[in-house]
Length: 361
Ligand code: IPM
Ligand code: MG
Image 1 (cartoon, rainbow, N blue to C red):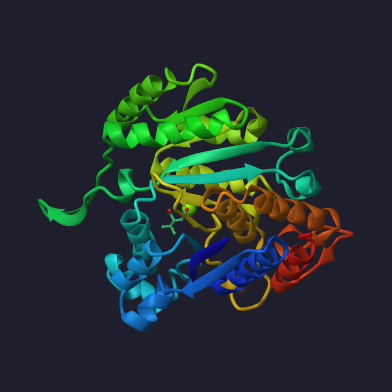
Image 2: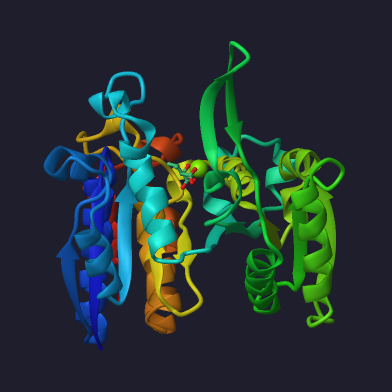
């Protein structure tokens, strides 16, 4: 098969980790007889430096013309980078939010798996980590506080900032359907996370999720308040299969879910629209402190590329091969710094990419 992949390397460690994911994709192409054609595009800080804005119409159009988008990370050090002297709508993150909206990527899938090989890197007590876990956060990505009207103004002499959290029933229904569909292919349990004891948007969320659940009698549904969910994630993560939640709660809980796997450098993500089109990126940030040092962990990006093979290209055997190669390399004791432990072999970002590519048979 011949596929066109739009590549946005982005900022910070983005270029390094995406280069390794492309190395792995090239190996997949070689072994399975495909051809992947890459088109590199600018977004975020890299785009500000060249175009003065974090996202151009050109980048959006080229992404739309591709079969899928592979992305690294966006943004810099908010304390020192000149990008953060710009007004908020011109900063790197505005490009990321803009492309999610422009491509209609409302469903963000963030699988969180504790590999037995990394249980030592898990910060939880052994009695919890030894059980392992395999969950997926289905985060709504184009609504809620991220996209509601906002302003900062002086009201009666007092500076006041306003953000708005809006969800309509259609936005809730379509993400709930995605969550139940995914649960049907997994362990058939959905935990819907909200703050229905306080927020109207959460009460509507709960009502609509209950309606959608009627079409999936084989799936067990439970509702959980977001504060309790944060607690349950560190107390007993194995209880979760699919967790579905709104944009902001999903942002926060997915960072927590990533850390208990040992490192945020392990967490892949896929952002999808109603079709098979998606943007694939690691869940972690641009890590400006280690950028350019060939130290970053490329596994999250490589696993995101595997999600691209599976969801956008229907290449299941190829995706399985990439995931198996990651496990194989971990079994062989190969580690980047973030997941390093005694007795293992420390490798660079490119060393990890080489090892995983070589393990694809
Ligand atoms: C993420 C990131 C982004 C988000 C930031 C960079 C705007 O934290 O993808 O989780 O909040 O969605
Ligand atoms: Mg985040």
